[in-house]
Image (cartoon, rainbow, N blue to C red):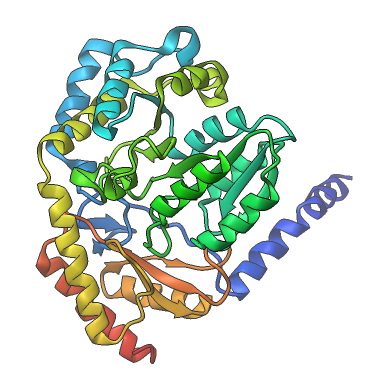
Length: 401
């Protein structure tokens, strides 16, 4: 009898084993490695010291002593947890202070901070597009968090070809009768490192009366003056209606935020489900975020170092004959085509003390698997040279270059 019950339970999850076997067979099974050191140019990963080439720690802030000090100091004053959701008893004075700092940094009227960049999109999109009479116009390569946010709406969906404003105009024309219209795009596209044509998008939004929302997760701290993001990069402050950012990449901590008009932020405080139904960010997280914003408000050196490193690494990779796609930022996709090749390349890199993960479908389209190299201001030239030497060795070994 016990065996029959066990077999019945096993049969329920036959699909799980089959899917895991399929992922392994086609080279899409993701082996999650474990880090046992602070984030930095070099880390200890799965028990060995490797140069870190795949972290989002753009500015090296994840282990910056100034952020660590700020987190330690606030613990003594406020303790470890907020104790409630923001809308009931979880808003503490440092939450308001972080939002004030972010609004000043972004050049916006107001900012709302939330638990992550992912939930920032869930906070905004369904709160605004709450009717089947609404329409959303979304870039086909937008991040999964945008896709999930759109799925939570009742709005009619129009997906336009990546960064193609001619096609965007076409779908705007199709949806022009909608009650509310929202155009959504990533600022910096994380897989390819290219930048959205935001001025042209704003022009079309003006023409069709659409709200412009940009998720600038990989642009915050990277592009614009002192890392102020894509709106600053293009000088379209006030025309880009909603800027969503994350505090877990260039800022080196955890959290997300939404910047825009003061009345919009007030509206989201009444409507946004992550704000209403999930506990607030912890004191040490917020304190470290504030320290990161303060650094960027007063010192452009980390951003400049990031770009110097990016230009150096990308230039050398091109000289070696690697295809690094269309990146306009320090993100460096090493295009390898098929997922098994990318997985083998990543495995060989790790054997040679370079940590750079392979990325395949569904994160990127089929046939466009890659190693995505994430350059950091924490890297020194000697670190990049070490990685370049290994890329060259394995590229020749696998017939990529």
